[in-house]
Length: 310
Image 1 (cartoon, one colour):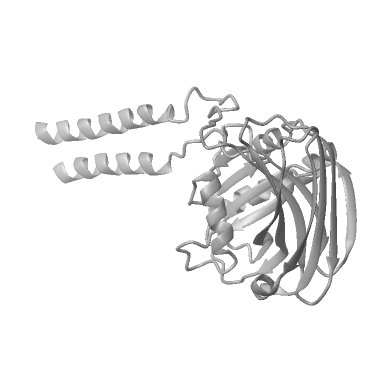
Image 2: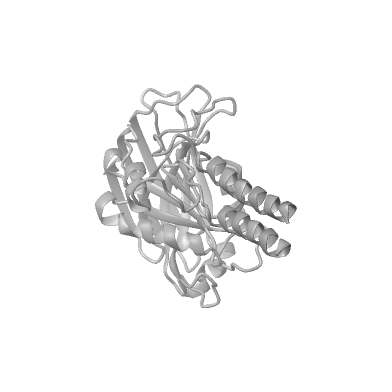
């Protein structure tokens, strides 16, 4: 009888503590905003000029082929594409990673250095808003992601991106940015990059069941830094890119690569953004824990008392 009450208390405590998931609210990063998203297929040449206000929201998803929670996040992002026009970039975990062949050490290291997270899933909107995990306190993940994606980046001007394929593994990227309005702290820098992206990679050994993994970021190549002290900030550049080191890696699942122009703001190290940007539907992400712990503890105490009484 005593053993029965004892195990009853342990089972209650274990069951309650293991099934409760607490939603972490989205917070601002201290890294700086990102914008861009103009792109071309690697095998095609072209030029594009757009107004910055027309650029899509940039969404980075930190993921892995073994991460089952990442599937929920990915489906939620796919569900808001038509409504929000988001452009997704999936960074696969690579550092100390044995199960996912789709990641890159350099790309993973850049994500860690910028956002200081190592466990997927993590979603970052426009470089400035980060959502960790797959639990939401909103109506749904789709609802929360829609709100985060629709935040105004408050930039104006134009961006021009040209890609000229010059060989089997080489190309020339040209870019020009005319910024009319960008509010950043003194000491901030703005850098232009080419992101090499694979549209879809097939990996049947992935244990989260997706099989086909889209928007995989293979490499990030710096093009040049923008002078923010100019009025207005105006700069351009041309870079010859050799894809030999990344080509074989990126050709994991065929020849479906594309080059994307991304602008990244780097805030000075001593600038910190306020943490919480959206009101939570609960007073605190940890609010539900005390009640659970109290109930579980009382159950164990009652069980122990009954044992003592016997």
